[in-house]
Length: 182
Image (cartoon, rainbow, N blue to C red):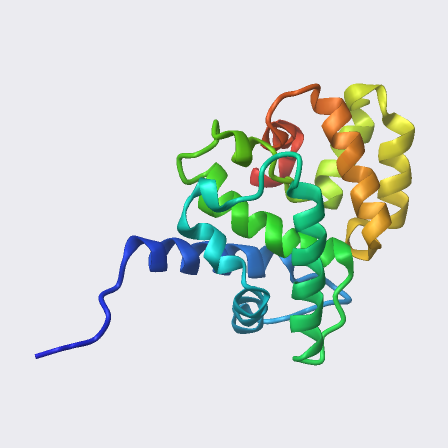
């Protein structure tokens, strides 16, 4: 008789979200395997928030908690001899949470609405081209820095601009301008 712990939908959601996040965040200048990405997510303690959207920080706490998560992911990367920027750490976190919550049936939950979207050059290119939120210069500045090189301050400044441009809409909706799905 097999006494192994049963495989659950929570395990399944974590595996898929961790795989997607690891593939999306591994970039030139900071390449890592899915196994390394999963380890960083595990060591950062992020899996506990997958218990449900009520486990996420409230909208007024998301930025502060995201800063803590990024620090933990960067430290977990260092334990594997990886040097992650805040932009790469954010991409790993944001795709993980997007797969689990935004695309997991909780898109209208107030805490999910406040989650940071994944940032990449394709999204920044479109924000510039379409002058989203009348913030063309801010998007150009972010594009020039390159998302994968963002410091904590540069990343948080961009998130502030995205929040302004979204005018109260869920943050994930900025991805309507992301052409990467094609």
